[in-house]
Length: 622
Image 1 (cartoon, rainbow, N blue to C red):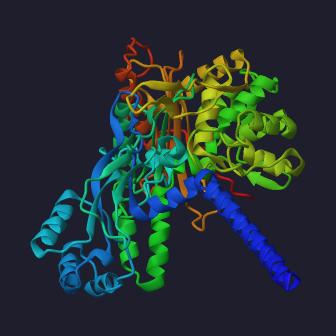
Image 2: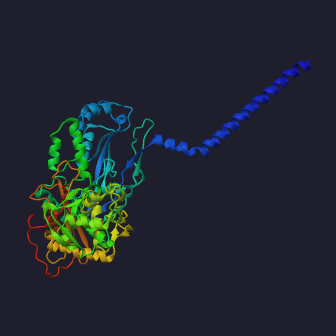
Image 3: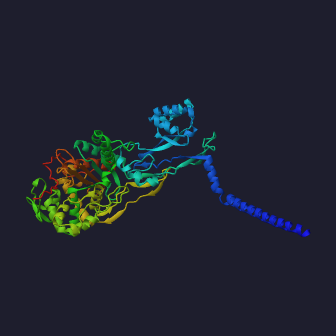
C-alpha cells in the first residue's frame, strides 16, 4: 500500500519542480525584457510616443542679407504665410462651403479643393505657398465667420529684392523652397541658408489638435550675410548707360558691362542687359522676347518660354564665350613685347592684303595703312600688322602667353556657371592661318570676364588678379566673420612691358580708334573691337566692344562694354561702345574722388565711323 502511494507523490513533486522552474524562467525573461525596454530602448519608445502625441511645425529661417559695398540692401526677406489644411479636423458639413470660399480667395479650383478636403484620412495638405498678409487675413476671417476648423495659417519667409532689376544677373534668385537657383544666391546657398525652427503642437490619438498652447522647441536662426565689392552708384552708372546703348543701337543679343579695380580684381559693377526682376524671375522682362513667346501656343510656347527664361537668367558676363576681336590685340602686342619678338620701334607694312598659306587677309574696309610702327599698328587696329606680329612671336610663345593670361581656364570668380574652358587652338593644332586669325582676335572664344581680367594684367604691372564680388561674410547681427582678400594668380608680364602697353593704349585713345573714350581732365587708355560672330547664321552679325582704363598713367579702374549684334549706323566698337565706357568711367572717377588734371590732349570731339580708324576684324579670304 505504502509503495503505491509513494509513486504518485514523487511524480507530483517532479511536476511541481518543473512548473516552478518554468515560472522562474518566465519571470527572469520578463525581468530582462523590462530592463531592456526601460533602460536600453526607453528613448525609442518615448520618441515614438511623442511622435503620436505631438505635431511639429517647421518655422522657416530667414536667409542672410546681401549688401553692396556702400551699404545698400540688395537681398532681404519679407514675411508671408503658407496655407495648409488638415481634412481630418474639418467639419463634415462644412467641406463644400470651405472648398467654395477658399477657392475664390486663393484663386484655386473648387472641385480639386473639395476632393482634397474629402480625404478624411489626410492630416495635412498644401493649399498655397507664401501668400501676402491680406490674403492670409481674408482666409482667417472667412474660416472664423463660417465656423471652419482645420485650416492652418503658418508664418513663412520669402526672398525679397528691394532694388528690383538692379544687379539681377549677379544676385540671382531663389525658388519656392527658398533655395538659391542662380547667381550669388546659388553660389553661397549653404552660407545664406539659416537653421529652421520648430514649434510642437499637442494632438490626441486621432491626430486632432488639442486645445492648449503651443510650445516652441527651437527658434529659427538667420543665415550669414554677404557684403559685396559692388558699388551701388557705379552699378547704377553702368546699368543706365548700358540700357540707353541697347535701346539706341537696337542690340539684338543683349549687352555686357564690367567695371573692375585693376589692381585687386574687385568687381565694382557687372551688368547684362536687358535684365529681369528677381522678385518675379519667371516673368519675361524683355518686351520683344515676351511678345515672341506669347505669339506661340502649346508645346512650342512652353519650349520658347523656358528658353527665354533661361536666357534672361544667364549672367552673360561670366557664362558666355565670345570672339573678342581687336580688343585681343592688346594681348598679342603685350606678349610680343614681353617676349622680345618686337619693340616699339619695330616696323610693319599694310598693303592691299596679306597672304598666309594661301589665305588672303585685309584690314577693315580694305584700308591700306602703309608703313607703321608698333604703336601706329595698335592705333589703327591693323590686321595685317598683327598677323606679322603673331608670326614673329610664333605659335608656341603665342599659346603660352594665351594660357598665362588665364584665357584657357575659368577665372575662379565667386559666381556660378563659369565655362570649364574657353575655345582655343593649342600649338600642335595651330597652323599659319590659325595663328594669323588668332593674333588679331578671331578664331578663339573667351569669356567677357576672362578678357577683362587679362587686360587688367596688361596695365597693372603684369599681375593676373582673380576677379571677385564678395568682400565680407557677415553674421546675422552684421559683424564681419570673414574677409576675402585679393588673390594674384600669377605674374604674366614684366613691369616694363606693362608700362609700355599703357603708353600705347593712351595713344589709341588720343590719336587712334579710341578717341570717343576721351574724358576731359583724365588720361585714358583703351582699345576697340568689332568682332565677327563666326558661328552665327548671320554673316553681318558683330559684337561691338571697347575696353578702357583710367587714369592710364596710374591705373585704377577698367570698364569693358560689349554690344552683341547692334543694328545701328555702324557696328564699330570705337563708335558705339567707347562713349559708354567714357561715361561710366568718368562718373566712377568722380565718385572715388580722383582729381581731374589739366591736359594738353585734344578735347573729345564727336566722331563718325568714317573719321575713325576701323577695328580690323574682317577675315575675308581671297
